[in-house]
Length: 276
Image (cartoon, rainbow, N blue to C red):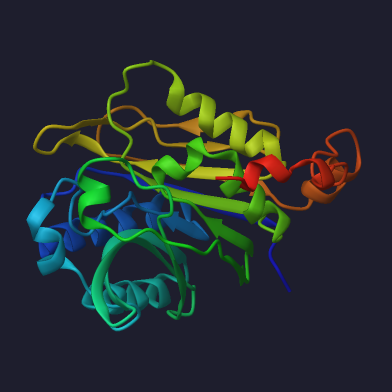
């Protein structure tokens, strides 16, 4: 039976570039603190938390397969130890059409310590990401003991189609590991968090990096947003853990009542969305 009252925690942090063990140790420490303070059901870490973001030529060296990779094994142990679901970003080593490739990936680990699956970032940021990473092609929703969880990664939030597909597949919570840098247009981050949750009448929890890598600075402001786009809690601009309890039982009533955004769609008119 799925749990309807779910506590989500976001562990906002700065990762050390290329220093996997240092980052894993820090993530474990923050996980322990989150469990001690909030007793969460779901803990989310940032995009590429295991390696840091601007790793460039180090990505291939830092990459690991799913689910056999070292960090996957570590967080399977931690998830089982604390009875908590975990979402975190890492560099995935894989093969596509006989060629070795790397993906910007987020893993989901169950509270029983099982790797439930992963999501490969689909909308890559032009530059370092498009130079090194292969684009993902699938939008997965995972059935868990705490509800149906979808995953997006950072810039995916700017594309309403991603969250909509996850919602149509039944997502109640979307976890968003992110590395959203200091923006040219102040407020974009808040807009996409609010819009994607409101558009689809679901809970959205985004966990962002903080600090400066090589050239980019990340502002944090991780947040958990309710199904009507209202912010439940938000972080500042340094290492911080935030948490909120969400009530999944309200979603069906909202979606069948005034907020019929999924039910009253008119997909017969949406053809241009899929045109090149």
